[in-house]
Length: 207
Image (cartoon, rainbow, N blue to C red; front, side, top):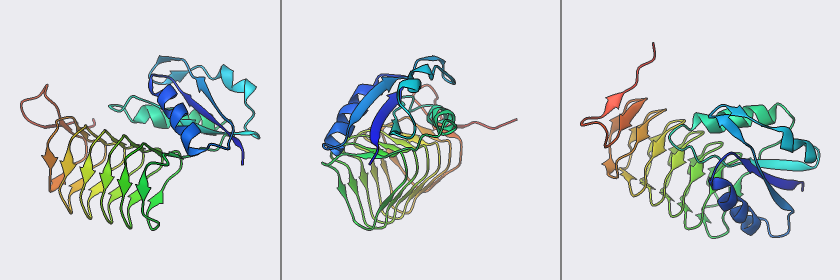
């Protein structure tokens, strides 16, 4: 098994590095800060000390309100030949029939039920509960204490804020930002924003 390098531009880097050490006690684990001028311009020079032939990477990005930043950094690193690795806390409970994509980060206290599918580059903060046959897309962020009930779907690039729940058989579209702690239910169209800044939920439409 290759050594594991945890990389990222922001404050979540140290937490994910500590999580990786717990997940892989016999694996060499290091971390590298990747400076960013803005959300999409990264300084990758530090990777020169970590050859892709010797190191896998785990990409840690805390910009949960812009999950696309995680995608952008992954695309740059993958173009250099690095393979992504998931980090799953040994204190998470995961059913044997569940599937977890590459570079997923699953924190302690999470429960992932039978038949659940967790997409690539998705982050589950502590104590997230994913019930049976739930499908979570790629580049999703579920903040602490989120509960997704049976048979629900969450689309790519969506964020659900802490202490929220999703009712069974609900369908949350892609690129949603559900930033109110509440229960969400039914069908929520893609690119819908719930926020304390808006009196009513809004949809962001492309030109």
